[in-house]
Length: 452
Image (cartoon, rainbow, N blue to C red; front, side):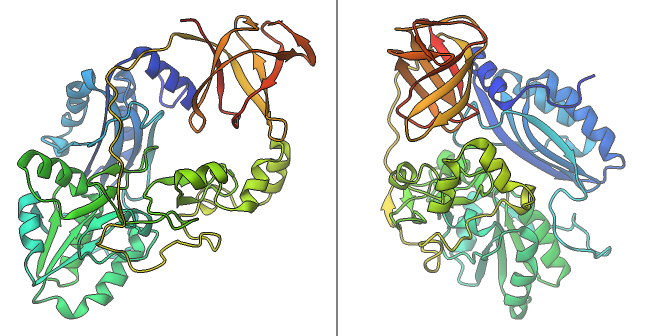
């Protein structure tokens, strides 16, 4: 019985490409009392694995929180696996505005203490005593009321690239930090103001709405389904968007556009930009905003120090990381003295630029290819890649594809190569091959031969 992943992200991505079927990115949550989260977790994994569902899910005694990628043809079957539980009958599934077949490449279901960490230890707090839910049209109307205070219960790196006009946007990295800050900031408005809140999909502001009712706020409201549902409803109903910019999402896309407004800056040069990236240095992995020009100049790094580290052999990079903090403690969210334009002022409701329209792709041509092997090393100064051939043969003149999550898909004609250190015309399984590559190659990259 399979209860954990058996494929790497790269292997899963290849299978998705070979299948050629549309996948839907979606999210959902439910607060409920779950007596045995471990059994609940295992049952979900077994059911979802059969449907080729991928994603990241947390379960706890207080409920479930999930972001998923599901084959479109299995959508209803996936819904059935949820509605088998009474507390998820009729559950709302937030389907992403923009689709990406590679939004998630693994199925992870973890048991946690809480599905949303809140830092609260108050047994009298009832998370089900929530605020009034508002749909997009109602939300727009209450935002126009001068008696309304609207609060963004997301983190600083989310609200920076997009937010509702006039919203309070706490400069925090976690949800738990925002609760006491907002409670103190609004303590004098418990009786007479409309406290309106929102987040990405609804799960954080649902808990927040219950918390502020528990704190004595009388008029508490929340955006039903969060920004994801708001974006769908304003499009379907032809409503004005009071949200500007991008909605940050927690998959590899890191954002989906709601309006064409760009309200943030590249953290390195200050140019209007709202594209997040993670620093290429694995020991840093800093999440920050980087424009295409800086991305090319800095090779996806946040600083010259990190750039120098990525150019070292992998063995040297590992040595530098030895003994340093690991895991979540090392992954920072956009706070670094190297970033000159990080939060250079209060968040603006005035667009800094207009995003370019995406190019229309009339036809997506499927490339037929066979896997040859994988990258072993990249010599930066010489611009030479080293690959190990694992399958089939490679010949001079072959059209090849180097593919990876960061590298993308790059095609070359093989004009010269060295096989096991000697110039040659043919390589077979087991051989080490080096040849010129005019772009950076990474250890996660795969080498393919294009056959037509």
